[in-house]
Length: 307
Image (cartoon, rainbow, N blue to C red):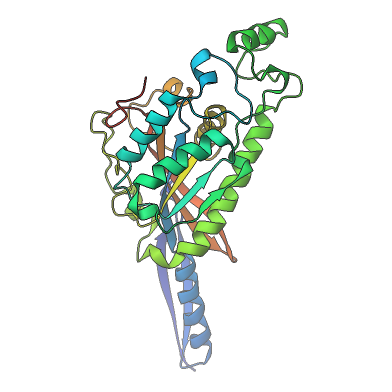
């Protein structure tokens, strides 16, 4: 008879510090030991993770934004909006990016092209234009004053943020687009960058201290040391729903002292919010394992040209 032994392997399986034990029985000198050791190695390999940064940026100002109107689909940046995009590009010029995504709307396209023009790491990257990132449709309210829509909501006995004008998109529909975009992004980034993760695990990113002071304003805050960084250019209402989904549905942790009213507020034009996400590979797909917020709605530092 061979020698029968039990080895206990412990490792973390989530950012909530849950632990579990895997009992590996090894029978020597039986051939079964080969299969069990192989299984154990495969199990440990499957626990590897990839952490990447996700930066959400709202497009620059349009004339409709300035006039307090709800814009439609094809509205260009105003002169002030072009200056904001230039300032954002200068602010982010030395921040390494591995992927760039943008709404297919004109104002977002103008913003992302300006940012990429200033950033050397973007010179060889392919811009992915995704309609999942487009602004919420406000139906018959597009082109009307925001105050008019508030009054429409009040007349319908509803609050403005949750009100859907006739022929408009509901909050649930926008949230569904956010979910679909994130799922696509997890799969793409996982497939492209799994080998870039090195030997990190999800405890390494959570133990990396971040500054929560808005006064620091470093453009690379939260992305230093992470080779994978996705830049996403989107819109105000869409970004509101995305941040809310990350926090309320996916359990994103916020920096100490964060005010949720501020977190869920409308981002200013070219406002920047950054998150760190960890994905794990299981059964050939990549799934979210952990997420935390670095900062939201940053508008200081190099964004001085903003009106």
